[in-house]
Image (tube, rainbow, N blue to C red; front, side, top):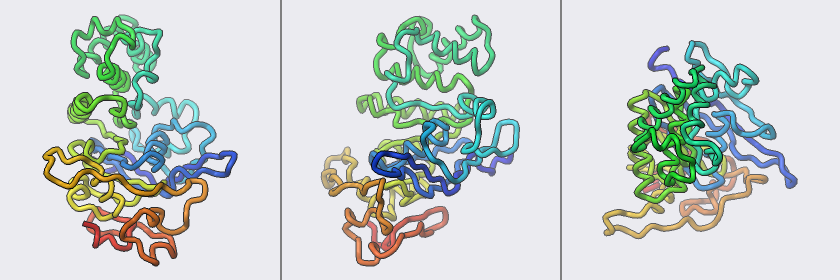
Length: 330
């Protein structure tokens, strides 16, 4: 595969779910590319569409979801397939083997009645055809790779015997069992304290470099992804509102929502303005407005923002913003 070719290309991805109150529009017209070995962070508040996007890439969105657009994936053996249309055996060849997921809650991702090592060994047998003894040794090796001390002893323990941080490391080991080329990490540090969060982020960064994987990292915390992501995709009410290289977006945001998210991050030096919340609430995903969806919470909003949909505007090479007043965002 050409190193410059994207591993994944999402084009006009839209995801909705039928409800008793009407169609819930979780994601609307989202497009992005992901290169081999690159980390893309999907960032936004709860309900912004970031997890729905990530789970659809992994084809874990549920049978009731209505998905349109394309998810072009460059397969390991060559050629491109549309993940959005895969079914049956074709999907099973991708899921786990080429695309794996680290879930938000390690407590629910692990089966409480099976030992940690047995769960990983079973995955190795299923995805890589390993024999029983080879799979057992492979499980110990994976636990060691993710930094669990005394991995052979821990392989014989049950999930409740591990701390929250070690359970999340075990979930990461489980995801690595199929030697994936893309790791989807859906807010993998949310249930952990701040110190353990930093350790898990550092582990994911090291694993990505060592294994050469691409990664989609979902988070509501721009501070958390600052040292991890190569590119940022900021979502609000199901739409991409800003995208670009992570360092550039964090240093000089070009959308008021991105600026507001940055203002929510505490300053570790303690000599700057205290963190601020974002007033107001996100619009209903069942009846989203046709104009700028952030207008009612935005201090820069003007009449034009409420007159028509705002497109993504190219503001610099590789950068875009869904804001008419992007140049005024400080």
